[in-house]
Image: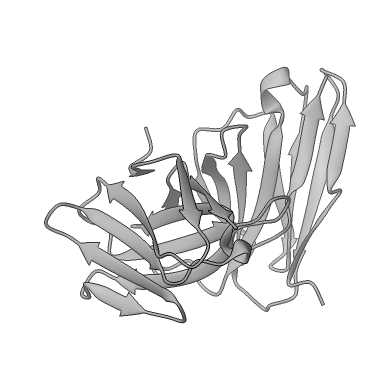
Length: 114
Length: 109
């Protein structure tokens, strides 16, 4: 049973398209995240939701819109895709949104924009 | 810019030797630190954590050292094995978990 699962694992699309990545966690955690990992392996937080409520929104273009229908799901929709959006996107979850606690990551979704 | 970084982007280690991976952080308010391991094609996995009221913590074959005076974190891996080949990240937590750029560890047979 995968704890944090993301789909799709790979996504190749053209500039200007709109795409979504879905994430589900079965750990019963309250908090979920989206991270972006660039080609140099640098991991940067994008968003965090606690019990469906947005709590962290880093400097991310508003073409990126997260949606949390319930606390087990956090989806990421990206409008008008650009070349610079090519990256691996990781979903993660943690028990709480407090300042301590392990993050559990999914396997990543590799987005390639042509 | 990001507040957490690693001193070296790559580290090559002979199998059986000990590895030391270093990390500098800049936010003195951070009270919790984690080391993650990321194998190729996978998500980061938790290795070990340490709170700011400690300076050393040991796990199975791994030890994390925290020096708050110079804002330095290190991960020591004993008897490095081929399965230890991965990218290692340190992360610090104030209100969010911030990651450094990672050190790629390659284990030579």
